[in-house]
Length: 234
Image 1: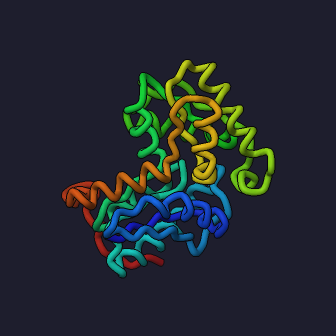
Image 2: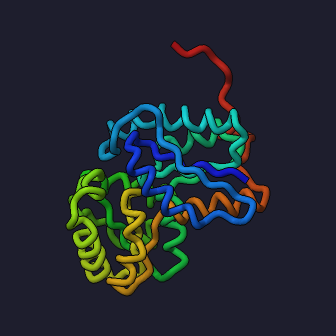
Image 3: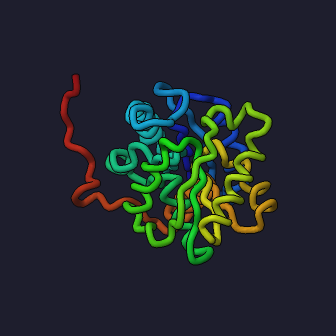
């Protein structure tokens, strides 16, 4: 089984962090590879960034299809291009927000989302509604740290941890969902500090894809997610 975890931005160091998170998740017959988009924004922090990231994401998945990849993870909390990716991929495609919210819903009565910038909280709320998670999602909070600063700011882990602690106290939640792939490596440290389950969507989505492929399940190709009709694009 081959799984690609696709970073829809072009920052290689973020992909390297994602690779470290998923390296221990592979079963004995599974190969998990973190892949960086060849073109697009260096980080995804706006609707414009998200839109501009989709062509590079679909290009990566197209390359995976040519080499027989069995399933994909979209490693951005906005789950950009998820529907289009499901149309062109033969195997399952899972977004990290989708997987993280569903996973957190199993862990208690409700969860809080802690994301990067406040301007992205509306997108997270839309996704919670789309995935039927609004009754579990008790609050969405921003730590106001830009995505790329998560890697370079020495105070980032502490700031995200404190944002998670405040979210749990404010919302009365039983779990926290980390709202950025760039936070993935902080997951265990934060959970140890705040005393509630903390869900990293990269891990949750990768294990979900691995489970679906193991069960022989994939996206239905009848109807909306059928392969797109061939046409010439200019």
